Amino acid sequence: MEQEFHITEIKDLPEGDGARLDFRWVIKRGNIIDFAINVSLLEDEKSTDVYRVDTKHEYLHEQRFWISPKPKALNLDYNTAFVEKKKEVFESYERWIKLFKEARKRGEV
Image (cartoon, rainbow, N blue to C red):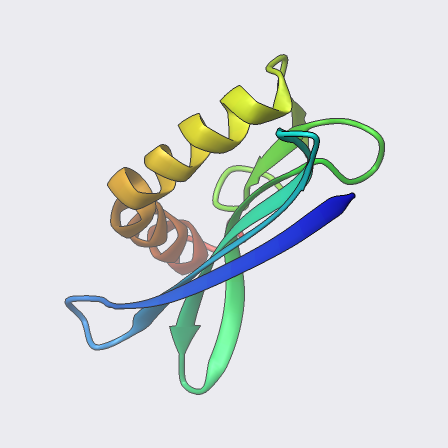
């Protein structure tokens, strides 16, 4: 039997904007078989994707939208990837949003 879980956290950012951290995962027999983690910038009543790691499209990959929208494949098992990337999101989301905003100002995104 599969179980699906969702958690969303909204974080305030120093410049008055917000960040939305979305976590979704599916467990079967004690193992993660599918997941998605998204970091979005909330500003002017809009949501803009900044970072994503997921198992869609048949493989594990991440996208750092301030660098490129092109997915980068990851060579990790899903359990390890989910734990490591969730930790990385909580440690880095503010910096990622700052990098995204800087890239946007330069016209790179």
